Image (cartoon, rainbow, N blue to C red; front, side):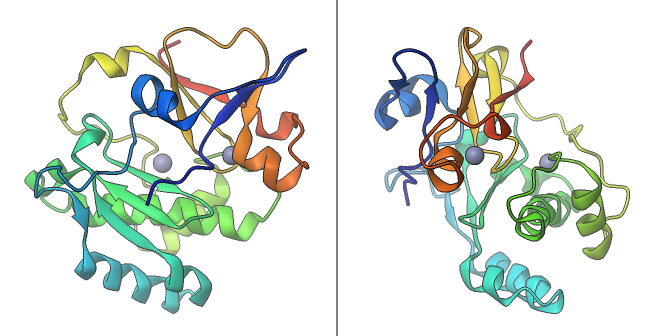
Amino acid sequence: MLDLSQLSFDFGALPRWLPFRSVRELETVETPPSSDESVADGRDEALEEQTREMLLKLELPGGAKLVTVTWNARLRSTAGYARYPSWAIELNPRLREFEGQVDRTLKHELAHLIAYHRSGRRRIEPHGREWRAACAELGIAGEAAHHRLPLPRNEVERKLVYACPSCQTPVQRVRKFRRPTACLQCCNRHAGGRYDGRFRLVLMSGA
Ligand SMILES: [Zn+2]
Ligand SMILES: [Zn+2]
């Protein structure tokens, strides 16, 4: 389930295209689990079924068909991730140690997918009003943008994390981008492969 479209590129005189392998090894936190990972990893059919039911209740059968829920032990200090448009939710297995946090985080991430789906090509804030509205519909009104769980921190977290404002794909960097850099996936999808400022990567943490 490697999503090869999750690349980023520098836009300048000579766009530098980062091959996925180097991005995976050096720069991203959220690589999908490989088959030799621990048993804590993998898709969770029961959670996927719950998620499908929530989407059907909100009359989103397309999302219900696509959505996957995967445990990913590599998330470390991150509670969960949502990828759009692949409708893929990843959850940190450590959430199971905290009462109610699996359900809450699942809904938090699902709300991102719903918000992106409904906004179409319109750019929205990751935790803006569309997301908050989806949270309310999922029964977690007032949900916070960031968790406060005591998840382990590691050296990866001290690096810079950028994210695409449209699809939310995170990109980790050791140094700041010197030039405006946009999400390759979204530029390919919506801008004919050319740099488009709507998809400029935003520094999320580590500044
Ligand atoms: Zn979020
Ligand atoms: Zn994007």
